[in-house]
Length: 205
Image 1: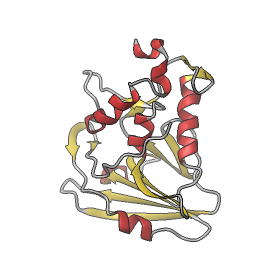
Image 2 (image 1 turned 90 degrees about the horizontal axis):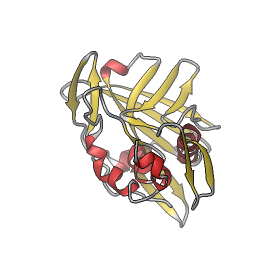
Image 3 (image 1 turned 180 degrees about the vertical axis):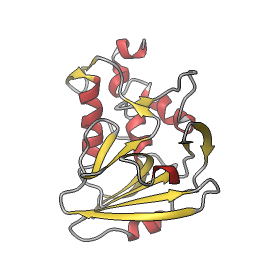
Image 4 (image 1 turned 30 degrees about the vertical axis):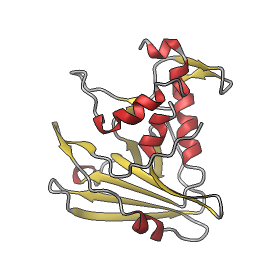
């Protein structure tokens, strides 16, 4: 099951140090994201914004081999940097989805989802708060541009996709509040029985 969301202007909730606050990022410019594509390469752009939403810096990377998932919520940029999809997590323990023919750990299921999403994008465009700029693990919200001539030409939010298809769920803080309430609509789609949500044990977590 594949769900490509139409909403690309998602709010991204980030943390600045130990103080939590909501940082709304403007809608992504799909034409700009498409313009970043380079023949034979997967292009990654990290964009860092300050508290006002102004872009402070952009960093670009290109790889002929693409960028690989190292967990269900993380992918490696280079030897020193990992991107973490902010506010998402795998379910706990093991799960079964008979429709997908899957029996195994939640962690492996989540990683298979992110790995699949990272197989074919021409561009990965991520936005993060400026405090993440030099971190080894950088919390971010990411969009991907996927293009197959005559079949698909789409820019969509990576977190929205993974949550709506049941590979990942929304993470909560210690007080029980969602870190990504902007993705509640996508979460509701996933909970209709996709991915992890086909398993009653996950529903009960």
